[in-house]
Picture 1: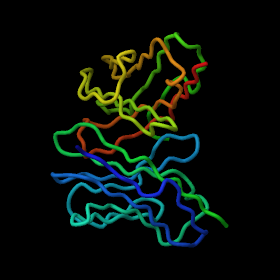
Picture 2: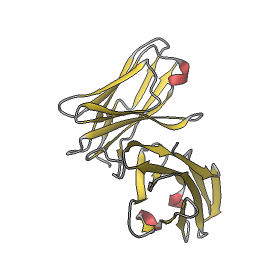
Picture 3: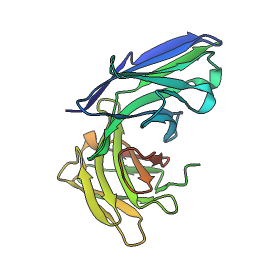
Picture 4: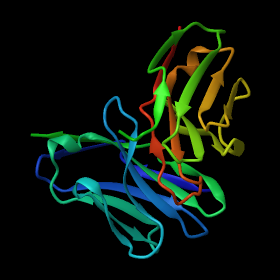
Amino acid sequence: AQSVTQLGSHVSVSEGALVLLRCNYSSSVPPYLFWYVQYPNQGLQLLLKYTTGATLVKGINGFEAEFKKSETSFHLTKPSAHMSDAAEYFCAVGYTGFQKLVFGTGTRLLVSP
Amino acid sequence: DSGVTQTPKHLITATGQRVTLRCSPRSGDLSVYWYQQSLDQGLQFLIQYYNGEERAKGNILERFSAQQFPDLHSELNLSSLELGDSALYFCASSASGTSWETQYFGPGTRLLVL
């Protein structure tokens, strides 16, 4: 069965520090991978996605993620955290022929001054 | 603004009651998804419609039902409500409902069952 694991329900960083949010998936077929962000009292918004092609994907707000097939990972990074990055981040996986996305449990990013 | 609208924003009701949540997808999108978000269950996929037809089903209770109308708006009906149904309900839409497409989420309907 398809699944997504996000390590760490909460991640705390200082403003200006590296952000690393971890996502691992299980799959026997090539996955489509997504990162969504949810700001307080809002719906989810796509940060970036990997479907095919280049394994390093750049998204909005300076975020990027790298698809590593050998590690079944799609970790999200940002070189320098900003206070406005504080939000909940969801990793999700989809597959051809399988209509729904499977979401991880989310990681809340806390940014301190 | 994602272009997906949901009404109402907030809903307070009592156990045993029935409510209807409404969603209008982005212009041009044919597929609608419903999700439930709660503290204990996280984000759970409920059901997907494409151009009026049910396409995929997730963890949707038998007390819940949905439909997509010819104008492509969708409604989620929740009946015999229980305290545990209190949650944030999101609607999302995509162009053709394929698994590699971006889903655009609405702002959600917050349901409180007392």
